[in-house]
Image 1 (spheres, rainbow, N blue to C red):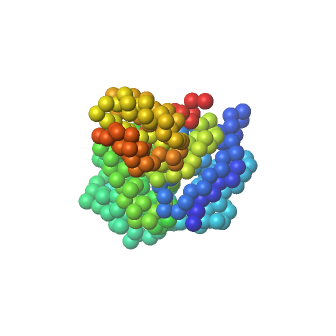
Image 2: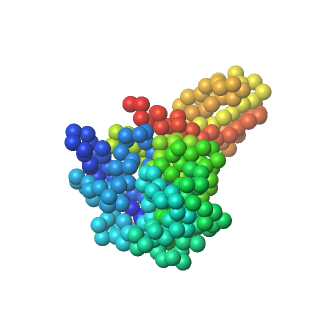
Image 3: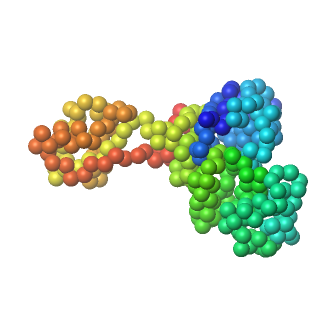
Length: 297
């Protein structure tokens, strides 16, 4: 089942078009990353699907129903900077959030604090929290009402490496518990480590979207080596489906048409031609490389 479907969403601010006929589908059970540089339209998109902003045109559906009709308790959200009372404790801040939003009940506060690993600091004032702890408290607030989907805008923004690792692990944990996560980020490394699916935004346009592994690769790349790479280099140029072959340090990089790389067949082909391979592995293209390939045009 798809939890979210956007159809031709367009949004402008005066002469600036923030989103241009954006369409995408978010499958249930995924960690779906909305990736793009600052100003690409990520926050605008999240604000529209959370009914904070209205689109100029287009539509969206939550769980197959028009966005305006969906029960908001099914969706927890964190947009931009967490907003809590600095002089109140974690538990009292969540009581205020629960009372104002009407989402969940007081009994869920303890569960939410345990989920984000803040229960032992439940009586501490918000002002004593690190940035990572503040972000985790904001996610705890989003968990009130036990939503099926969490929408997180730049959840690791501004955090140190420890804080980033904490949020990364928490997102994985929440996904394993059955939550679908939709997160916007400009940090390519975090999206690559956390997300199962990704959509890349550039100046309000969806450049590509899909499973992370599919987006990363527009071709298959194999690392390969033998005792002498020169005859291997000459031999592999003749193998069907090979687009290019080049030397990189001690390995040859074999570029094949997408879906055409067959390590078993290549190993057999080399052996039958008198070359015994010492190394053969599939290389996954880094998201950073693929991102710049897609957005540089």
